[in-house]
Length: 150
Image (tube, helix red, strand yellow):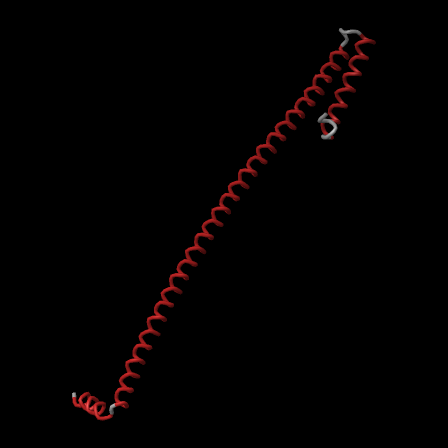
């Protein structure tokens, strides 16, 4: 199964099968006690060990990639959480700025209204004073003269 994906493992597996086939052929032709059969058995053991070592390497690599992928997912989650926190903080800042603007705008409108009311009252007072002095010029002059003398 892994040999289909990993060319190195496929090559090692082929060497193992070839060594095993040669060993079995030598056993049949020369018998178990032959020196060539003994060397051939060592070659089979060595080839099998190479296959097993490669399988372990691939498993460790897969675990390493799994660990690396897990770490990447953790980093991504941390970055997403940090980004969401920054978004919330920015929204709070914007809300605070909007509230400050609304407060400032409200008090500017109150100040404008009070100023308009003060000027309107002053105009009415001056207008009434002017109307009084023109309606009764003698009293107006006397009153005006009293104001000038004071």
